[in-house]
Length: 480
Image (cartoon, rainbow, N blue to C red; front, side, top):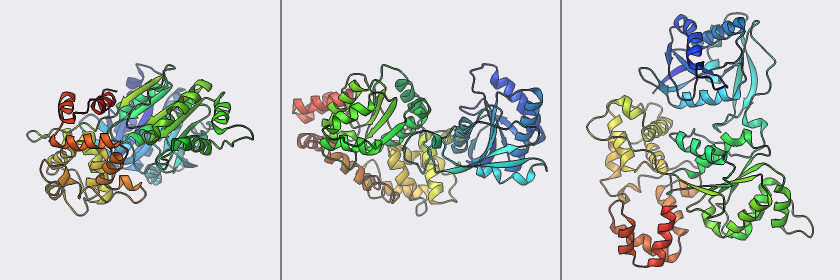
């Protein structure tokens, strides 16, 4: 990865000719600024420049040409950040951030991130950057200032930016962007946009990032939900009877005299178009009838759930979240190939946060790929391993992770960020928290499955477990 300045173009309308036209509009400014055109996921067109100043000057030229030609359908944005730059395409964190910046703008507008605004001295005398204030984009990262490129011949008077600040929600801010889950976000959105889906339940092994994915899906859907998207953490709750109070507290619903809280919730939600995100539902699974009652009473309500298993409610769609795709470790894959793998990207980003001097190179990328494969592509495990990069280079880290034994890796996979819950600060803690949620007979089955060195079939589980009722119950969870 390297730091580059990106100039992105987005055309809101679905127009098959838009990429060709947008690239043609970019080319004169790109050539003048010694930039290069690139393909980028989610962008109509994109160009890369060596410096923020070159990107800003190019954006001004493109915007002025569009204004002169009466072309006002395109949104432009400039951002500087870490990019995976290949022969004809770019990807990585900066591209994802640029997409979010473009999504906040309006046709004819040119938006600039703070990193790109550092090049403002390169702009001509009559051009400037207008401070639009601190805003929160749909990637849920902390608030950041956004600027608008101004010049005498550019349009002004745009509506407010389409950011999370102007929409009703309590979605928690995230320190890191979501990595490698674009397909899962798209699948979740497609399901929630289907009127037949009343409940979307994200299931998956511990550490796969169910909560982070659910929050991102809610953020993406937020502009389509008139009464907002609301995050309700059930992690501190063990008693299912307390779920109504948890929901009411977030929605600021007070229990009225003579009315039980369940009924009050149904009354308030009846006419709302709203999304509730119920996180960690597995430990209060007996509250599923409450969710069903709310759905029956409120036709505009949808529920997004993270849970170890589905709720089994009418209109529910379970979406199983697998670990990240594993990188190839056969032979010696090229750096460009490994850099595109989401697990390797996640490791590299977290490693750079722990050690700013870390750089994914042709020399260490195969070792990083082996680490990610050794950790089965589990995001939490990869993040915890990468956090040790300040003390352990990839080769030393791989050695510390041990051989095929996953147990040997547990002491290394610790030291998560202090702001995280205790169960997410070590992989042992995450597994232990999940284990404690099992019934005693399920815990016994879990221990018996330790005889398998890797994956196993349901038939093998039945042969080892012996208790047909427990095995069939867990098999139903797996099949869902």
